[in-house]
Image 1 (cartoon, rainbow, N blue to C red):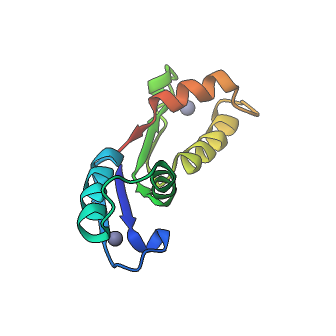
Image 2 (cartoon, rainbow, N blue to C red):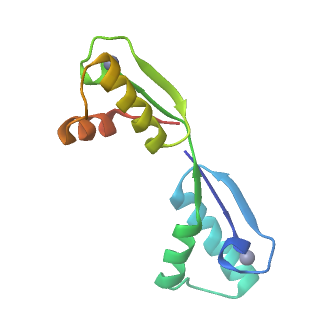
Length: 118
Ligand SMILES: [Zn+2]
Ligand SMILES: [Zn+2]
């Protein structure tokens, strides 16, 4: 999962951007330094942290295989662009190959635990 943020996203007119940080923590650490050095903010107030977190764009590839939850059908999804997309594809597969008209909540929870993000 990669994390991207630009000051312009929260209405700051400074051109600073962080692209593809490896974690949200990493991005926030860098942003603290930037806030201090360029905006004179020594500690970022919690409201601003919330605003920043909402503006962070996440990109990753989501993968899942039925074998991960003990289904022996060989089905895999690799490289979906969001968890929602992956779950939608999976509901088609569940309906057409496993004859499940909808996936029970427990199974969805089990699936979510097994989804791999890269
Ligand atoms: Zn800035
Ligand atoms: Zn399957």
